[in-house]
Length: 367
Image 1 (tube, rainbow, N blue to C red):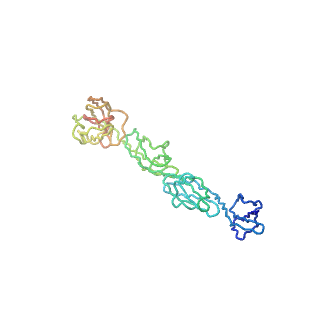
Image 2: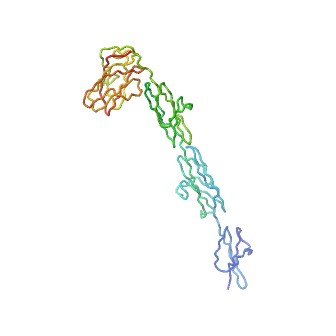
Image 3: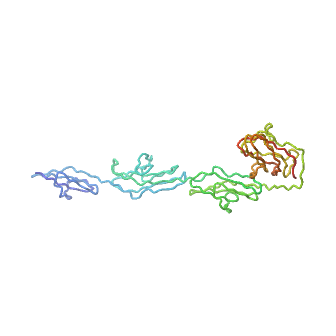
């Protein structure tokens, strides 16, 4: 009976049938081996008077090992990030990067076939790489997931406006911005001057009541950077009644919204709307008049509401007190003395849910 002997020669193709690595336990027709590295095997079949050697069988061992995983990165929008993996294996290593979580091969990165990958994602994106040893992809290992966090730098889409108020009134200025995890700090002065931060001014809006004309601005920040708003100037109308005399005028209709459209006619004042009316130069009211004595009448209001008359110019913040309250379906009138703004005008607010017809009659002025 013939017997078989197995011989092993690691990492070298055996051409001379060397028996220097004889497996003494391999005297059977079947042998199970567990090589720890790529190895070559062959068998010699020995008969009574002769022997025959088999061809060499190569058993490759290819287990790639990742020695350095790709790391998470943070970039500003539009910037690049480079992810890198380090690996060892035998034979040659190949790489393929993917977007998504490790093991998800649905989205391979075009051209991502080297140990490093440079990308510029528009939004936060995860990546991983498959490291393959040998041909056919039979020996591979997946890296950990690396997330590239994209930080959106702040961008101001609406700058604060510049309101006009009377002394003692307040104004609210605000900013609208886009970006991630935004913070705000308001300052007094011209934009970029951080010498006078506003205490508690850390929101999107700021309510102020300066006694004199004052400028403000806001810095919008996040971990990516910051952006400064334009300067917003709150103008304080310092014109106060300093008149010492009251002058009567022939009762005069200053405005009637039922008349054709015009500065002193229609249309009806819209719901929750403001209308500016210049009184100086009309009905005998001279330039420089401090205030006017008038009667305001609301004509057959469709709904209940109230109106506020207060000094101009246009854009001035209103007080919190009504000049006249009106009832649906009624004609209501009220007398008032209204200070004029520096431009000789007054403002009218219709605080109701529908348009209203109204009349202003002047009887005198202070100067």
